Image 1 (cartoon, rainbow, N blue to C red):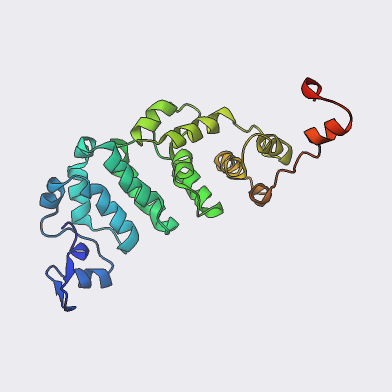
Image 2 (image 1 turned 60 degrees about the vertical axis):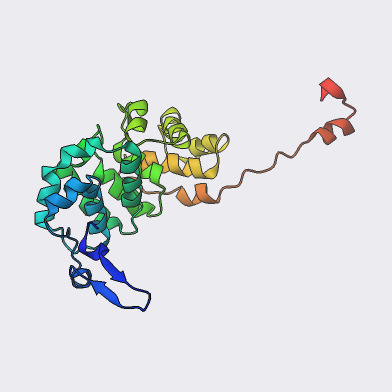
Length: 246
């Protein structure tokens, strides 16, 4: 096992076995490796990312000895498959604790852990703005807000995060349909071609670049329903039109 809080066992009679004071650490809101942190990390370098993820969810403060070991071995993150890295980042970014998420990402940025994974610098102020407006924002939007800028190479970014085909399409559309204005008229043009979810995501992606602006139209986008076109082929037939004329 990696952390003391992950090494608490129970047998089929309900007897609990806590060999490494995991329960004590849980109560103290402490996340630490079992034994020597360097040994645990070298067994599997993914544990560097797991340390930050578990600290995000369960720790009051980050353990300094464990953090130093993570910094020491950070270059080994590159040895991990993109799929395994992606799995951890989905869990990190989908945390239900937005305040701790920003704090943990700040540490990961400062200690250059994120630089071992992403070519671009994380835009933490944008992410923080997004989470204040829409705390349930989806994973692709959080990533786009955090890392994509006007000069981003979408293909390289998609490789870094092992993006799905759907995510690749989403990122490319965000850049294709850039909004110069965030007024209702511009948004209605987007709604003519895309569904509510994408329109809302596009709006938020552009909104967080302008922190002074308020999310005036988010509710409108979420509740918008495209009206049915009030004219059909049957109406044309009733006017005497047939075949190619219709």
